[in-house]
Amino acid sequence: MRLAFSTNAYMRFPFEEAASRIASIGYEGLELMADVPHAWPAGLLDGPKRAIREAMDRHGLRFSNVNAFMMNAIADRRQPYWYPSFIEPDEGYRSVRIDHTRRALDLCAELGAPHITTEPGGPIAEGQSRQEAIDLFVEVLKPLAEHADRQGVLLLIEPEPGLLLETTDQYLEVAERVGAPSLGLNFDVGHAYCMAEDLPTQIAKLAPLTRHYHVEDIAETRVHHHLVPGTGAIDFPGVVDAIRQTGYDGWVTVELYPFVDDPDDAARGALGLLRPLVSGPSTAGRPAP
Image (cartoon, rainbow, N blue to C red; front, side, top):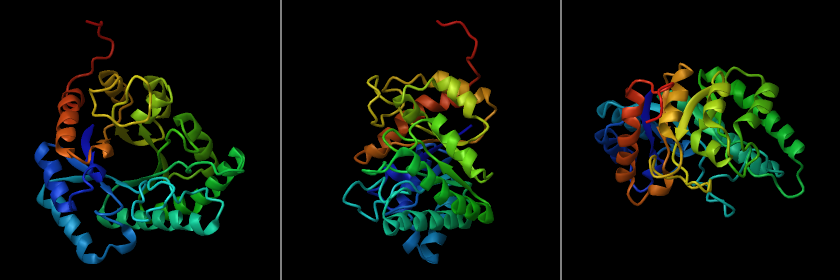
């Protein structure tokens, strides 16, 4: 397993400085935010793309993921992360999310990143049944998954509390109906904890479909608010053991977007807890102290 940090905590810094800080703290990789101010695909010219690649090389970093979930550039009055969503009743609004996702897949391929992550369908609209929303989401995903396949990258769905797909199990229905090898799961450990999922069980169960992990801590209340790992209630030694037992050797990205006031301190705190767990031997099966 390799540790990365998401640039969505560094929204107050240009990409070059964000990359420099993340590397100097000790991370091997970073998750690029496909949004302002770092890499909004709709307005990203060749020069800025080249500068991103050069900064990654200069600081010895690799891309763990391209985060296409957030859309702060649109500044939707309803909420800047979830809207416009994949299941908007209004086709015009829906197309904004679809077009952004297609551009993010293109950017992912161009930069040599492995995949993008995106929202799990957005909030269900008033008057919209869950089944209608699922059907619409599946139909939207099919051409996007085909586009990902053509580009040689993956399209990862991230279940989130309050949205159409809230749990990792709910992802299965959509994945089976889309039936595309380019579609995968971004397993967000904090989100699963919010939904009272049994983390070791679900990590093992969803392992064949999981292509990337997001980690953050969550308070014992299970309220969806990202905390620095080690400051909440999640059993990270148990989580890392569960991931290791699946044979996963990819990226684990720390996502701490609420910490824009001091992302360096949050990044250091997370690395201090996680690096010994990721690099150390498994503790599975050992007696409790």
